[in-house]
Image 1 (cartoon, one colour):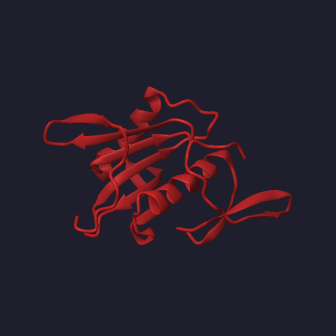
Image 2 (cartoon, helix red, strand yellow):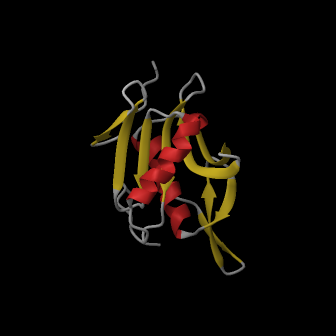
Length: 150
């Protein structure tokens, strides 16, 4: 797999039926190691190991209903109270981050109402803070670290 713009993390990888698999520490199962999955697993490691979010507050690839259609978000971090805190959209490293990427995560966030968004292809990372009162967003240099008091 291609080198990503994240710190170096350790992953469990194995081959089965001539396909590489990676152990998803959130779903606790082996998943096919596709380029987008490589980015997703780096995001999870980044949240846990670098930003210090508890693994128990992170969810990966769950369904949500949007305009009567079933969609899947990539990664979400919840607060201790169970409200969405960070919504993350992952793309394969070969997929450039475009306005369409932001439109996709914004549509998902209409349902989830997360105050922070991240869009990444593993090379480029974009972070936003959403203000629902002002109906505005602000780009950030980085995501906040976990704060156990919040």
